[in-house]
Length: 243
Image 1 (cartoon, rainbow, N blue to C red):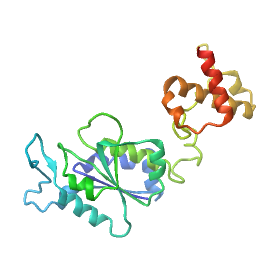
Image 2 (image 1 turned 135 degrees about the vertical axis):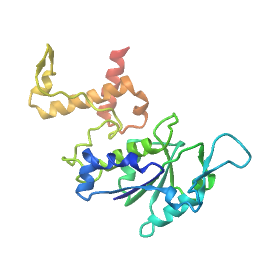
Image 3 (image 1 turned 45 degrees about the vertical axis):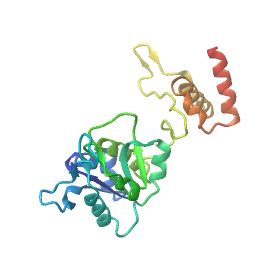
Image 4 (image 1 turned 90 degrees about the vertical axis):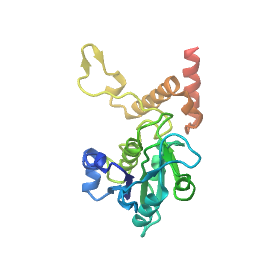
């Protein structure tokens, strides 16, 4: 996979691209990551990339030409998925991360100032995405969140191929509780079932705990989660016990 980030602050990505799972994926050639300063594509003698909005208003808008020219320059071989980081966009989810992980080339456009010239949104981007209902100074933080979520899904990025399958949201549910050594820490003990060695019972317990945690903390997720008949029965029992 190739991922390009159009930004006015490429230095924000230097350590991000070289550490942890992201850095390992780069070192193993599983992904190519590039931060591109779209100011370099400005034809203005002062290298300006923003201007006042027509009709008046506060703040400045990013002008279309540098971003259009940057996209044209980096997408000559493969037509990329072009993502605009925007608080008006679709909420980014694990499902969207899984979808994007199947693409060959992603481009993230990080904005600043008061916004973008609307022609960037209408005629260039394929997706508008947001990480939440709040406003950031720029799109760089949001881009890093999305890149992290996508890259860890690439084949071989994690040490175990199935490591992400039990993550919260991967199955539509929150992740079950997990424990490690010591078995007894200051009187707080690991649940006996996890020490039983019975993998069937452990799997059943973990599923029940995922359902319980989701019911208690994010019941909205149950509306779209993939639930079988047994899951539905467990949920009914859990709801009755809460009454």
